Image 1 (spheres, rainbow, N blue to C red):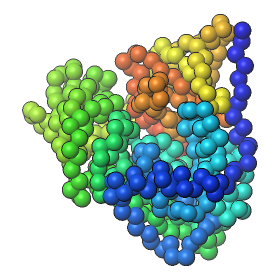
Image 2: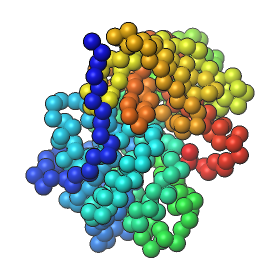
Image 3: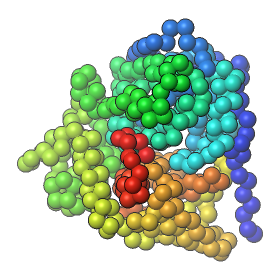
Length: 424
């Protein structure tokens, strides 16, 4: 029997946080902040009650707990990916009533503008994570070019909430809480309502991009924050997938505090300050983000030469029409110079297909440990989200993410469209 899907209503009215749930939000946030000795600094926020647009960087689940503590007890609505509503029965109901607005990642949803305006009109704080995914190496992810225009449309102050150390405490490639203490965050008035009307969209974007520059590994080293977690490098191969010694891709592994290339045998030790040291020979990159950007440069070269192509990879496909994941079927995924191409057959024997051309995706979302499903690439349309899993060694989430961004930037350049640094 053919499956019947119920789809998420992306036009639903935003709900102001119910008063009876505010104590629960505090209970779930304040003790965790205290455990990590979170220090929150407020700059230019004297007498600011809202409404305002709050832009936050994104490194771990603790981001939500930190921002709750920072703005409590103000009413806020949070733009949250629909996949975050997946869990126990009643989670969707609960999250909507603490103020969460469901959105599909990396899609242009006009409903969000209308919902955001309603949040502002109610006098609430509109909380947005414009990077739209956890940072892969604790540095700034690309921001949408539409952000400045949206902020200007809201007509209220723009405030930033920048956390430092959340990636060090629980990196997306191994989300085990390392118990790091001395985490920091700053709640800062970035653009007043009066300034907003005087600045161009480009100037607004420039201010936001500048405010979003961060590097958790540089912060860790500067502050002398030691990570005693014995398995601190486990999972690092998921983002550092290419060996800088021999150049081989997809043959990296990690265990304990050691990162290893299984092709040439070279090993690097991750110290308590997050720095890498080769056990033999030259240390090509001691700073993890430098290794990551080297990989990006290699992907960019593939794209600019026109040779980027994964080949057809076997995948299982999970669909998320509402907040209940369901297996759709099996098929193949190809990522090449034209974008993502998916085709396959459902469990009911029906064919399915999906195309995501380069201009439609300035970035993509990846999950290294999503619920019980493991490592997944997810691609969304306004109506649905498909998750892809594969056992193929060439199915590399980090390279998908880098290639999607580089393909989009390459497309923009070929179209003669200016690319502002930090924006897509």
